[in-house]
Image 1 (cartoon, helix red, strand yellow):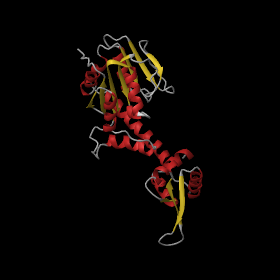
Image 2 (cartoon, rainbow, N blue to C red; image 1 turned 180 degrees about the vertical axis):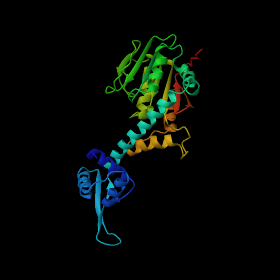
Image 3 (cartoon, rainbow, N blue to C red; image 1 turned 60 degrees about the vertical axis):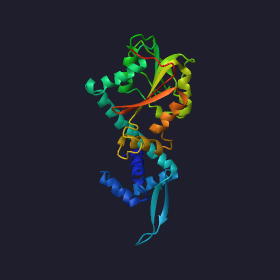
Image 4 (spheres, helix red, strand yellow; image 1 turned 120 degrees about the vertical axis):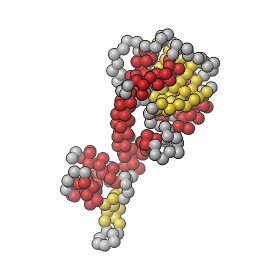
Length: 290
């Protein structure tokens, strides 16, 4: 077992509460990892030096004091990274599954909703924060082939590669809070994973800045708020919230996002479709799509 994976395994075990070294060894063995106790203690000492763990001696019911380990704030952030990676892996697989279903299950309904965004609109942009997924490609395909369209833009962080086989697309480096477009230059925006915004208020103002009068925005938030804010059994909501809180970032729930859009735009509606919540916001005058 590589040292990096051992440390990640220890972080997951210790996240459940104060834990003894021998208990860590037992839990690892139950997972099929049979390691020497001396090696585990050496790794625990390294993790304490790295400020991932903190330890203290505690009196036991019988025998001498024993050393217990618990996560530090830095360790909790490391747990957030681990959880976030697992969350994104599950979500990506599920997204691939849903978007690959026969059209009547998802793509037809999604296209009907998206038609309100891009139908007959000349200049439209897709803004993303994560590497390209099947959902992103589905949106881009519809945007690039829309009737009446003139320019289509993909706006992405600079570290994300866009391996796309299309000449009808302009790719720009940017972010929710920094869209490299002139004022009132877009007729519609599709923004995916808007809850990733570091400053939602600033993002909303930036969306409004680049939209023309009558423009429309759809903010897509996969796996968020589908069962309602107070539904403790909504696994998607739980995983999204845990991903953010464990990594030390504020979690923007459905109502928080809706209110931010409502403060910035002339109107906002909320709709659920399959694994997504969509916030449809825009500027007057409202333009009806045929």
